[in-house]
Length: 368
Image (cartoon, rainbow, N blue to C red; front, side, top):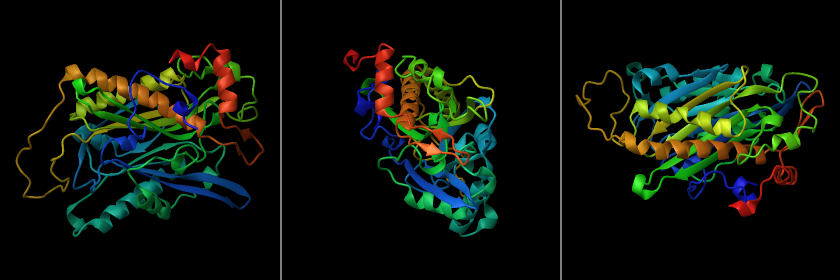
């Protein structure tokens, strides 16, 4: 169940119809989930792919910006986004040791779509978090076929959450984590835009978990930790993708990406040295950016652009923080019990666990 189905209303904003990143028109999400047993080891991993527009990303690029809260992680393609402010590829999320193969698969897909690959190059965006507690990460079980499957599965409908795609083997606040999503609609008087968030949540300590501002983790902390015999509570990472249909320029996208930090902090995360907290925001509001075919001679000299005035950015910042907060909680609630190879059980955060702990912390659904 998702947070709102349990009466947990996070923030003051209004979600979109799907309460997902796919509420932003044109955005599509696909998963490829890998569950197997190879040479006696559990494989629990996969790929999640976000396509920023309904069309081909190279033909219809959009402005983007990124932010690193803590850099104990990896991502490809972000330097060009920082430099040029353009997102011209899909965004893939996987595990730490599969970044390279996913990036190469996206390059190959791009090559195969081009009439003349000699005139073009691409630097796909691939992000990661570590799933080595529940997955045989050293086996590198993600392959090009999984990237192709995630692309084929991409749709603009509801987004599967929890132990799917890149989030299959992830742990969040010492519960089962993974993929989560949410959205917010900005009031019409402030533009009527949508902000959507998708997280791959693999971070945080149990006793620091907060939901709707309540320190619920203190009630849940006595439960056995999956890190009791190995690792450190809080080890891991979170990556966040923010999308909006507002007409933002690259530096405004970067500012929007920074606000993912607030949503993470509201749930009790963002303070670990061992966490790679990397965020990307893209904006589809400028519809007519020229194709990212570098070296073409027929491109216009300049392109007229729209820009949301800074006075209206605060509503987007608030929407981003709330969407990230709720996406993390949705990822937790979608979790399922999963055992590691050495017998450690990572429990899913069920309603039966969460609601009594919330009430013991002072929360009541009637407050909303």
